[in-house]
Image (cartoon, rainbow, N blue to C red; front, side):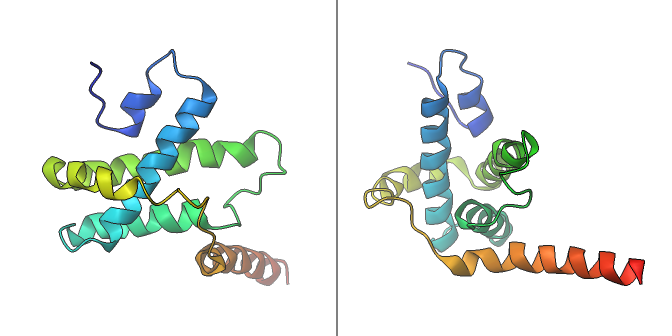
Length: 136
């Protein structure tokens, strides 16, 4: 039996197809959400978990998906890094207890909350405002 502890470990399994890799990230994202709302999670892991969840559920990406290659690279790189960091910050026994609770999160499809877009939209507005101020 293959024991896998982080998203990177699961991604290293060369026989996995892209759909399987997406499902791994989807399941780990649900576990990170459970970690975020749990009282057992250390505060510093909750900070990373909140960044991961906001990024995963935000309908607006840091780099828009319509930009060829780069648009999807941020999803492929940033989200697994945040999830793996969160996993490493949470004690293993606590992390394992979140697995059962996280299975039911995706039953009704992807939870969409537009409030999660606010940090990304704010970042874009700040960048555009900085460019405009620099030009003027």
